[in-house]
Image (cartoon, rainbow, N blue to C red):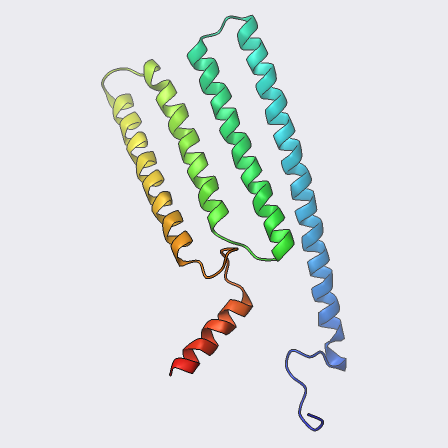
Length: 183
């Protein structure tokens, strides 16, 4: 309409500076995400090289198979955490949305990793006393965390409004308009 006042979403002459500031912040955010992705790639390379080096050293020194296996499995889980972080970062860069599900996966992998380390140390702790109590308490809490993260993951997957699993401004507008239509 010709005589209508400008919308709040349409820029007017006085709003050019904040829009430029917003574009600058978006550029800075993209730059930060790029730096984080480079650091994640470097971390993955370091973990992979360190794992291969430690595996070769364990073979040379005839280290115990269980300890070596636990170390390699621990590093594999760490690489999975890094990969999940990289996926999440790529998703955020592509869609400009932050979703909960990848962080729940990261938490679940981290808890399983810690359970693996704690149970591998079980052989070295005394069979009674305060150390055993602390061990069992930590193992129980880690088990509870696995259960809680699994339930949270199931709830998030069940309640997601879209395939991407995130709440966007358009899904909020659609939900609001559909609720008005039913009233």
